Structure formats: C-alpha cells, structure tokens
Length: 240
Ligand code: T5A
Image (cartoon, rainbow, N blue to C red; front, side, top):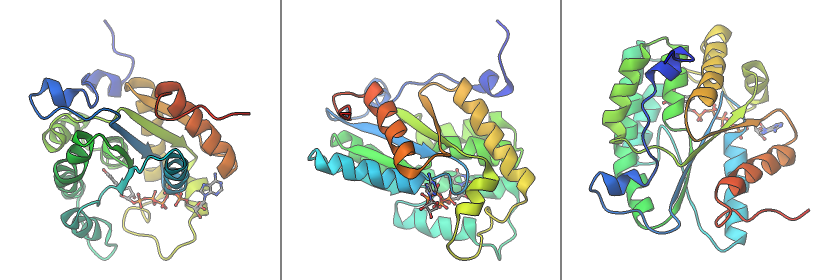
C-alpha cells in the first residue's frame, strides 16, 4: 500500500493509555485520560487548558494541569536551557533536551497521574517534537520518533487537540516579554512547524484539528465539543 505522506510513512500505531496495561505496567485508573494541547506559538493552548480545567472543576473533577518542556523540577531546569536565547544549540541538542525533559515528565507526572485515575491536561507533548524538531529543524523524523519512543516508553495521548492558527497570527498575539530562543526563529521555521502540525493531524491517530482563529469562547466551544464527542462520560456535552 502506498503511503499518503512522509509523516504517515513514519507513523507507528501505538495505543493510548490502555497501553500501560498491555506493556505490563500498572493499569490506568478508571476515568484516566491523557489530553495534549498542541499548536504553534500563541495558538491559545494555555488559554484553552485553563477553560477546560475550570469546566472540569465545575463537574467536581480536579485535573492535573502541566506543560512541556517542564512539569517537573528537572524538566523546568531543562526548559530554561532549551529556551535560553543566549545559548547556541544545534537541532540535535535541542531535540535531546526536549526528550530528556519528556522522559522525566512521563515517569514522574503522567504515569502516576493516570495510574491514580486522573485526567492529565498537558500544554504540549510529542506532536510538538515532531513539528518543531522534525518539521521546523528538519531532523529526520525516523530518528525523532525512535528517540521519542525511548523517552515515552510508548505512552501516547488519548487525544491531542491541535489548535490551528497561522504562525504570524500566533506570534502577533504574544504580549509577554522578549521572544525566547525558539520563538525567535525565523518565520520560515514557524511556517514549517505549522505545516507539519497540519500533516500530523491528517496522518496521526487521535488528533482533533480545531480552528484556533476565532474568539476565545468560540474556540473553547469547539474544543469541548471534540472532547465530549470522544469522552462523553467525562466531558459532559454542553447545553444550548
Ligand atoms: N518545544 C516544545 C519544542 O520545540 N519541542 C518540544 O518537544 C516541546 C514540548 C515551549 C516552546 O518549546 C518548544 C515549542 C515552544 O517554542 P510554550 O510556552 O509552550 O513554549 O510555547 P508557546 O506556544 O509560546 O506558549 P504561549 O503561552 O505563548 O502560547 P499558547 O499557550 O498557545 O497561547 P496562550 O493561551 O498563552 O495565548 C497567547 C495570547 O493570545 C491570547 C491570550 O489571551 C494570550 O494573550 N489568545 C487569544 N487571542 C485572540 N483569540 C484567541 N482565540 C486567543 N486565544 C488566546
């Protein structure tokens, strides 16, 4: 069978959090969900995570809200290095930093939370690496995927919400401080990232492509609809 795209050709099909059970690890708790928010700079990920978390709290559910790179002490220290605009880092070093942070993140934050039956909402996960280091930095995707597999042990999100926004719009939304090392890359880099994300949305399982250009509430309605279509028992359909 012919492959649809370069990214599709390199995809490996792995299951979601159920994989924890099949790989002999502790089973995930009932109700556990691992949801990643993805997109270019300023796509609105943090904003949407905050809204989803607030809505879950109103249902009496306290989610684990976290981010990558980061989420652990080691991961936050690695983040500071990876994003420091005064450092010159080649693409392979950048990749390995992201994956070092992911390895500790999966083991210290995500797996324990899923085993405890929690909902994990993360600002970025593996699609960021495929899009930024694979697409943006143009590292071979086979290498990126293999190393990512080592870092995650095969743990994939139940759903990745890709907030689709053109990179110039996303960058223009940013109001805080100076651009970090990756934000400061040229627009061609950010366009390759956006293009790779769109290809991933077509090729990868469990990705919901959300139009991120509308008003915040409008985007949230689309995000919640995608979540409740997939997990109606957890993300109750909204009335009206
Ligand atoms: N990275 C990360 C890699 O290269 N490889 C990897 O493997 C990983 C995991 C992380 C950096 O690391 C790189 C990618 C990144 O460069 P980050 O903090 O996650 O850094 O990256 P950013 O995308 O820059 O985070 P931001 O906080 O800037 O963007 P968000 O979270 O997407 O956007 P948000 O919600 O903070 O919104 C930004 C602004 O826009 C407004 C908000 O109010 C805010 O002011 N906004 C909207 N305005 C209009 N309409 C909407 N719909 C809006 N939604 C939000």
